Amino acid sequence: MSNNKGVEALKGVWDQVNDENMDGFLKELGIGMVKRMAVKSVKPRLVISENGGKWTIRSESTLKTKTMEFTPDVEFDETTADGREVKTIVRVKGNAMEHTMRGKDGKECIAVRYINDRGQQQVDLKCGSVQAHRWFKRVE
Image (cartoon, rainbow, N blue to C red):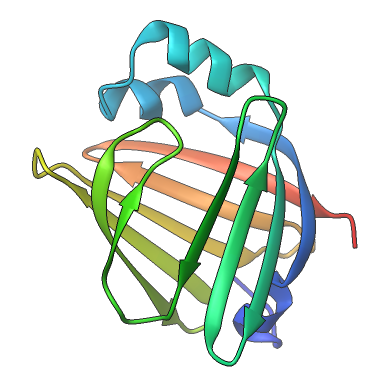
């Protein structure tokens, strides 16, 4: 997780280029096969911005556009792209953003977003003992 610009480097427009073990991760979240297949078939574009301490992450795809607005360290209610209702908190930890989501069922998911050594935005996902990864390249 190296980058001297910290989380500021996450701002911009990003296209997904690859992922690893998303099916296993989505299955661990309890997402059915049809939704898992749909999620795996699209490569979202992320638009990340910040204004006055409030961050916005917009995920755009042919299936759905979802916008998440948050202030770091302030918990909020979120409905995920797959329809789960969760409590979410985003914390800045060094050069990374750590999103912690807890569902009504008590299941916790953590997504850590940072710029890797290749200049890509990497998202490391963990739910239970299952891990997955997504990589995005900068468009703008």
